[in-house]
Length: 246
Image 1 (cartoon, rainbow, N blue to C red):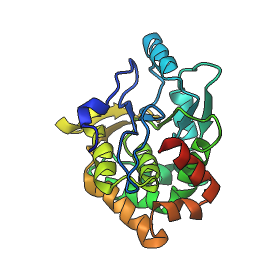
Image 2 (image 1 turned 60 degrees about the horizontal axis):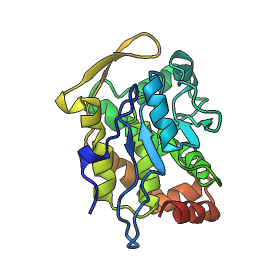
Image 3 (image 1 turned 45 degrees about the vertical axis):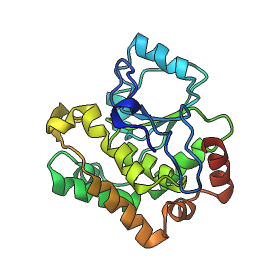
């Protein structure tokens, strides 16, 4: 039995969409540990109170999935010196900026979102694998994975890891879909100004986006574990991560 949606959200002042990615049962009869893997939006508006809250969680690692320009425009607030911050961008660095923006622009509606998730299934494997390897390092946990708002890039990264841990698709998708209510997208699109100073529309996500992502990677790699192994995660990495998180 999984934790209900509202109970998964953790109020951290200055950070949107913050929640625990653990607590779910797995196919092996185990359970993903809580208070070890978190997910959220960026930390650039983190308040003093929020910073103290994160310190209480004992974070050791923060994985930032955003592009370099996003990090320059909206730098995360610095955390305790004991926290290692890793920049592991989801989108390939050699893709021309305009093309990358077109591919990832989830603000124009459902068709754009569909294209974004197909693009991530095809190109995000190395980045998701790098995040998985980072989480498997000794002393890496508790850890936080975040992008700009914590729904798309963070969504597929965390979903792939949860699936590789044996969490059911129903629970993986339910956790992913919680971003809508956490960001106010359950009431419709939200407008914002992007890192280039242009107004954008952040659209609600829907379960078919993530199930489509999972279907695509399974079609080629069999399952989430095969996807990670094909992109550089070792069996030792997975064994270590499972021993720590399950």
